[in-house]
Image (cartoon, helix red, strand yellow):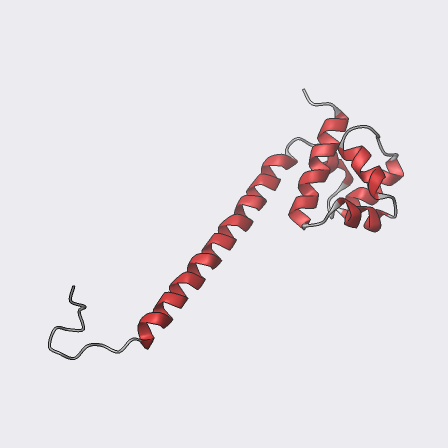
Length: 118
């Protein structure tokens, strides 16, 4: 069973990744030092209730979510959705580029239907 410090550290890191922010950016949002955020995320410090509320607000989650193990599957699902969206975008760009390339080629009108002879 994970300790509260471990769950807090994991959830903070995961939520930062979802938001795409660094420890320094979180520290700025919370009005604390980057070192303090690092100490929490390495389980060397445990924040006060007031700080936990500020961290949760900065991470755009409810304070109890900082301590729930159930947040991990939700975070993983959200991260998977982002990756899938990126892959779909990459595929769409590649297909669009190829269609554009094919549209720029002129067909060979020598009676072979534009087929390339090899």
